[in-house]
Amino acid sequence: MTLSKFWQRNLILFAFITLLPSVLLAAPEKGQLLDRIVATVNDDIILKSELDRQVATTEKDLTARNVQITDIEQLKRKVLDKMIMEKLQLQRIKAHGIQVQDEEVLGQIQQIAKRNNLTVLELRDRLNLSEPDGFKHFRQRIRQQMLFQKLRQVEVLDQTQVTEDEINSYLQRQSLIQNNFEYHVGHIMVNLPDSATPEQRDKAKQKAEAILERLQDGEDFSQVAVRYSEGSKALNGGDLGWLTTDQIPTFFTNTVESLKVGQLSNIIHSPVGYHIIKLLGKRDKGSKLVEQYHLYRFILLSDNAKKQSNPPKALIELAKNIKSLEDFKKLNKKYSDIPASVNAHGNLGWQTTQQMPLEYAKAISDVPPKHAAIPFATEKGWVILFVDGKRLQDMNAAGKRKQAEETLRLKKANEAYEIWLRRLKDDAVININLGKQNDLDSEKMDDK
Image 1 (cartoon, one colour):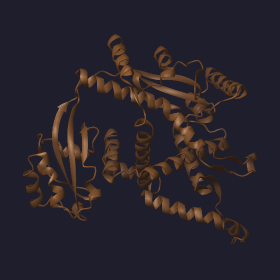
Image 2 (cartoon, rainbow, N blue to C red; image 1 turned 180 degrees about the vertical axis):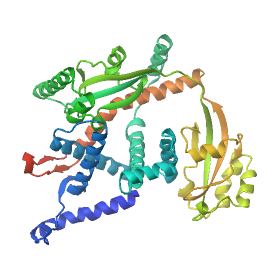
Image 3 (spheres, one colour; image 1 turned 30 degrees about the vertical axis):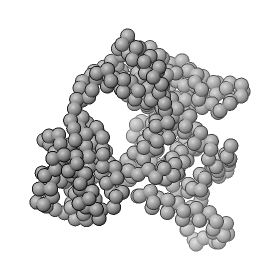
Image 4 (cartoon, rainbow, N blue to C red; image 1 turned 90 degrees about the horizontal axis):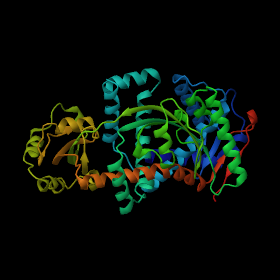
């Protein structure tokens, strides 16, 4: 579903709010069930049917990971909170005009299929067997996650600044300490509100202590995280994945490095709350030089490119005659009837073959620098890639300095991410009404 269609649908649903009282007053036909609104998020709504579908999907995922669900109402609240955060992020995505191209989604799907030793068609068939339209829903989830990543880049990472002194200090530390390990980290968090009162701090700490006691008594970490954690990865069992020391938030870096695999931390206090860490795994990350390609892309729109077994001979000759970046950029004038937006982001920058879509990697596999690849078909049309340069990842002093800056920015952004999510929620007008059945109360959060 495109963003425009998503917002068109939600505008229709929002209009439904104004009709809701009259709808409820009308007598439903026998056997007909009326949907209802369980939350409003600024100008968007979440319907009970949407929540029920998400709860069912989450329940299925947790069951597959052997996580027992003991409190379905608590699960509903967590899923609803996740849906609210997704709505808020989608609203910001619309405001920024962020988009993900079909080729980017396909590239991610190709990499996922490859990691699981499957073709895309085999992956599609398996997903469609597991649930109706399984592959379609999977593709939509991949697109949404990519949109969220781009939003995080714009709202958090791009706003994170690193000073020259911080870079100098980092390089000095790295010259003294070489840590070649990656850590698989489990994380449980109890939130603290901004400007928390002593009573709120005591209550949050007591909750964290009760959670730690459960874990020390042998309860499964992922199940406890799903039930009690208030971190963004709660529904993933608190799994933060594999992280290098540089990617671990500063306030528990030393703790993670001191833990043995399988060991729990004590309660860690930070500005955003109380944390419990479990080291799930540890491995040597190693090091190697990486080959990178500086790519430019030009798309020739065509409705039937995918239907053709080979590119037209004229296009092949066109690509063969491109010997410089200047030649490549002349394609914009040659095909001036193509909307400028189609090729507005033609400079793809430096990428490894692992970072680019599989079909891109295949196209440039034997292409020397300053040459264009043979055109290949996509859903949009024919794609011509130009290899402007080829290099091994620069590890000299300048390269290390740039890498240090990027590492520090990422580390700071990881620390700021939870705060950003909370502020996004605090600045929104959110009304939750799960209904009073099952002793659930309405709650309302207004603009601050």
